[in-house]
Length: 430
Image 1 (cartoon, helix red, strand yellow):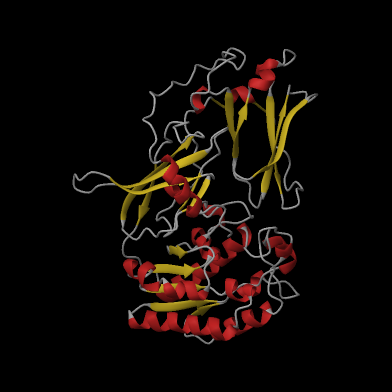
Image 2: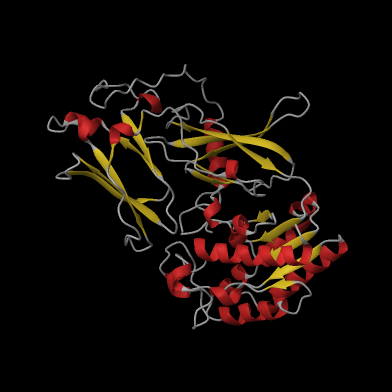
């Protein structure tokens, strides 16, 4: 999965905001009997005092983006707002312009959302109309959408995601490790970003209970919202199964959905076994080899699933070079008493990749690299073949299984997880 943001921007931003003045006292959320009853003019001291409402909806499988529409009434005679480039399941909407229009009854405003594919075509019916007045009026905090509180074990490289705060310039993120035996909590990350999706580029290898939170900042680096509620997550210590890989293992799908959501993580589908996610988006086999000691050994896995090579052959890396890296990974596993289980590399769909503005086109000879890797994998004592069920008659990733041509979406991730889980359980138990 392409990284939507990076810590590089956050590092540059941190220099500007580390000297932030102390925050003002919290501003209480107003009573909300109706939108019309709210005061018309509010100083935008912070996010909670901006005249706005936040609406949210459930993630729709394989939706690349969503079209949000706001109508003046349930009769849908007047469309007030439409945005079809929303990637996460929610949006904050400014109300001041509607309030100035004396022909609009604020309590009659309604909204609907439509899930769209990569071309903007609806993939499901539009939702039922809902009143804006039933949304979250003047939210004080960002809303976290990462699902780590629903996971038994967080991935090695977390991705922190939340709904954008209207008119915010940047965001501040903190990650805390809870203290043990009465010791205080320790802040282990203090990050800044201009985006609302932040990839943690440092591995969380210290086991324990963690929380993270986010708040919005204005253009001067001052607090623009209160801190979000803390989301809790767990980092396990010693595990039986772990998976080393690239973005296919890290997670995410449908172009815009980040790896912090269970739907696009194949590790969500390996029951009855649990697999520690050691994936890192963008990795080649050389990258996986370079981080083996740092990222694998802290968890002392008995079995290591290794799924890599797609970023090698799609960039034109010679198959023999990829195989040499995989062989060294095998040798490292053997040296540390870990059983390596190799997984065949799925194909890609170059035509779809060409339509992605920020994605490099696939190497013309990508098939030879994939073939070389998979032939080697199938010769290993423990190997899993996931390639065949994902491949069409032309040898490419099935059209209905990918949005960007490189990453499998929800259904193929489920297929991958079930195949791997079944193999691990049958060979090694729970």
